[in-house]
Length: 114
Length: 389
Image (cartoon, rainbow over all chains, first blue to last red; front, side, top):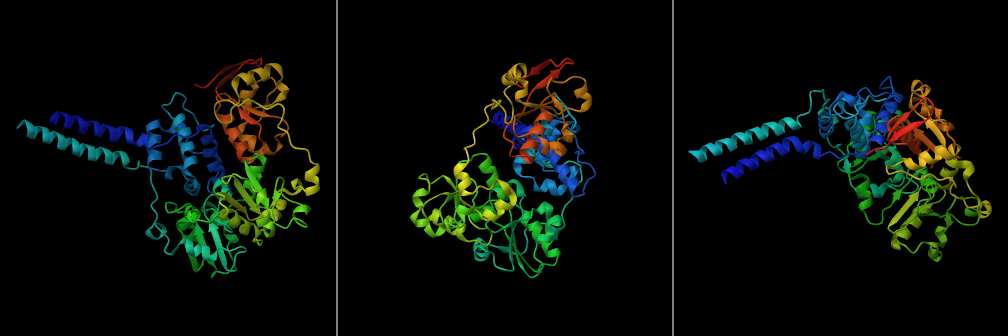
């Protein structure tokens, strides 16, 4: 009985720590995400908030786990262009997340935002 | 004793669980700007749907403005509260000139419902500009649509997209037939004038779930709204109004407007004979057909290599022209509408981006595709395509 209880707690601990953040995130369309990600910055440049239409954070700047964490926590401050990020609907965010995750530093094909 | 040790172990694991899950939800070290208390949370003046209904009229009364704070595309375009104007929160500063000059005018902001804070942010910005009668309809567009009898309004861009896509809808011109509809109407619209609505209901589809879009003579014209309400009363479940109506259509589309006489004589548009077989993923071309076209009839498509020039110079497909993805937006208006366009690159990433750019910037182009997969092009123009898993 006690052994089962111990095993249950261990499983719950591992589950919450390692599975929940990734499971909470939906994957979208990475191809569309690439376009949407770059469009954020071209829009942002058009209003004069940044100097270049190219995103400053490349997919290979983080590992997949790090991208999971960024999007699970909606921690978009590091991207700049906060107005554009705030206006992104959930579907667009999922697409961008999928693009960054697909080409993350520890993915089979790490990529710059080329 | 053994039991006590086990419970101590469980307690320790419990502590570990709390600490570890706490860590997993703690934001990373990147600085996060926390808004000041006055800049966060709900706006101080919230109104309900009854208040909005009291002020939403066609035409809108003077001194009242209803403002949709959501992104214009696609949210506002595909459905908004009738008579609302679009000032996305993200473009508030650029578009604030659209607000009335009278600072005592009633401004009602809304967005996507209780979880959406765009309207609250915009309302605070409006107050900062000196507007004294600012409200937020926090139930937003979903709250509006929950009320039986209410309908959504759509934009010119949306109506044009539906027509171009040959969407399954019935477009109804609510103006008088003689003198208005017969002089010119939106292509494909049928005439059911509001004054004759009850006599002409047989022209409406039998399927009560079919989309009906009513329009009339612009923002000052109430006929389309009246007809929409009558259609809902008849049991139609998917009813929309296009408030800009015929004047808005002519202003946006102009020459494509069809008169009744011209419509009668116009041939029915046929789908292009050289339609492309789509691949598995959205926007992709079927790889086998792509190879067949290149082998047998490459001039059937406009092939665009969107890699950088230095990559293109090392070898490309025989009929491909080079428009690097970074230059595509500048040249997008020159893309032809008379033959299918296929984008290629090395992996499908840049060609996919190009596809979505065209869908966004030139939605009227229907025959646009990209080649997905790893494409290795040799100097002599031969290639190897490794299809995606």
